[in-house]
Length: 424
Image (tube, rainbow, N blue to C red; front, side, top):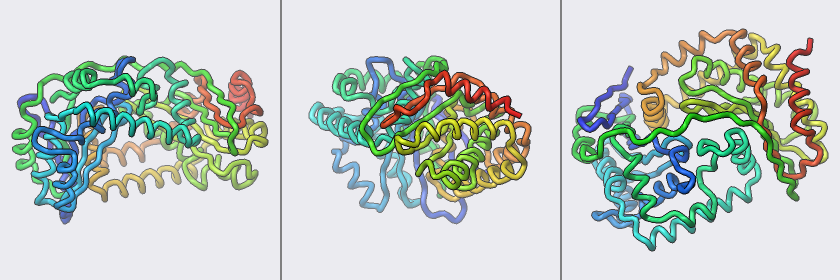
C-alpha cells in the first residue's frame, strides 16, 4: 500500500498516498464537521464557513489568496458534505509547500469581515435559489429531509434563506473553535507526495491547532414518511428511499451492488424495463449514500404527470423483483462496474486524497483498494438478495415534486412493495 500515516503531537493526522510518475499533488485539509455538526440555530453554517475561509486572512486578501495559487498554475476548491468539510488544492510537486501554507492560513486565521460576510450570505442565498429552480436536485433534498425528519443529518447542506441570514461572525467563530480541532482533522496529500516533508510542513503550519475532536453528532434515526409538492412543472420528480448501510458496515458493498444492478446503468432492471421497454421516463436511477452510522438507499424517477400512475407500480415491482431474483450475471456485471469506478478513481490524485481523508475521519484508518476488491469479490448473489430485501422491508420515505396527483398514497405503495416481495 502506498499510504503512510503520521500523527502530530496535537492529534492531527497526516496521510500521504504516493503515486510514482505523477508530477502533481492533490493537497487536502479536512475536518469531520459538516452540516450534520450544526445545531438548529446554525443551519447552513458549515457551508458558509467554507465560503468565508477564502475571503481574506491577516496575511492575504481574498484576491491574493487566489492569485498566489493561480500564479503557479494551481487551483483551490472546497466542499461541504453532510459529515465533512474539505479544503483542497491541486499543484505541481514543487508547490506543495505553498498549498499547505495557503490552506493552513485560511483555516487558522480567517478575518471574517462584516462586508464579506454580508456579500457571501447573499451569494449562498442565490445558490439556494438555483437549487429551488432545479427540481431534479431539490427532490433529493426533500427526500433526505423526510427520511431523517427533524435531524441535522437530514437537513439541506446549504441551509435556508432565513437560517443563512441569521448567521453572524460570533456563530462562525464558535463553530470554528468547537469543530476545527486537530483530533477531527486530516491533512492528506496524494500524487507527488514526500511523507516526511509533508509531516514537517503540517507541523509548522497546523501544529498549533487545538487538540481534541469536538462534539459528536447525535445518532441518526430513520423516520420515513412523505412529502408531496404539487407544482406546475413539465415533469414529476419522485424519490423513494429506504434505510441504507453505514460506510463501515459489512454489507455496504452488497447493497451498492444491489443498487447498481437495480438502477446503476443502461443495462439495469429499472432502465431496461421502464425506459427502454415502456418509455415511461427520461431518467431513472438508484443510489446508495453511506454515512458514518447510517445510509440512504433509493430510486429517483422523472416522468410526465400523465405517466405517474402507470410508472409507480412498475417501479415498485422492479425494486422488489430485483431483491427476490437478482442473478449471478447481474451481480457480476455490477461488480465489474464498481471495479471500473474504483480503478478510475485510483488514477486521480484528487479522488485518492478525498477517499483517504474520508476513510480516516469515518473509519479511523485507510482502506486499501486491494481490501475493497477482496470484499467486493466475496459478495454472493445470496448476500445481494438478502440486503436488498432487508432494505426494502423498512417503512419507505417518499418525496414527490411537480404534477404528482396520480401518485398513489404511501400506504398503497408500501402494500404493493410487500406484495411484490413475496410474489412467486
